[in-house]
Length: 218
Image (cartoon, rainbow, N blue to C red; front, side, top):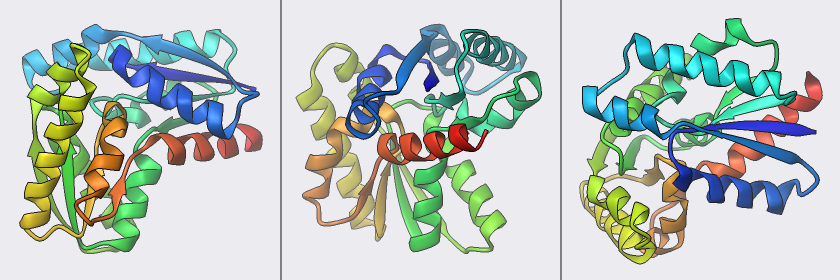
C-alpha cells in the first residue's frame, strides 16, 4: 500500500512518518511538500483561489504517483479538503478530522493551540462544522503562538514545546476541558502539555489509522 501526504511545511514530515512507522511499517509513504502554500496563506491571512489551485495540483500529482489514498497534513488546507475530491478518484482525508471528531464527541469546552496564524481560526471553524454535523454543542477557545513555529523551524524543539505548553496552560486556566494541538508539527509538545493535567489531542496516530481503513475499503 502507498499513501501520499500533502504538506505545507517540512517540519510536518517527521511526526507523520513516525506514526506510519509505528502503526503500519509496511506502508510506503510519499511526502509532497510545498512550503510556499503556508507562507502565502500567512501573507494574505487566509485562503484564496491560488491556494485552491495549488492544493488541487498537489492532490493530482499525488494520485499520478500511484498512491492509494491521500492525507492532507496542513491545517491551512484541511478545511477545503472537499475541494480536491472531484479531481481525484482515491480517498482524501484531512489529517485533523479524526482528532477533531474525538474532541467534539467527548468535550464541551475545547481549547485549540496553533503556531500558524491561519490554523487557529481554521481549526475552530472545523470543530464548529463537525459539531453541527453531529448535533453537538461546543465552545472553542484559541491560543496562537507563531513564535513557537519560528523556534521549531530554527531547530529549537525544546522552546517550541515550552511555548505550546504555555499556550495550553492559558486555555486550561480559562476553563477548557481538553487541549488540541492543531497542527501536526506540534506533536512533539504533547508529552509536556499533558503535564498540565488535561487530555491533549494530536493528529498523526488517529489520521494514520483512519486513512488505512479508507484505502482498504477503496
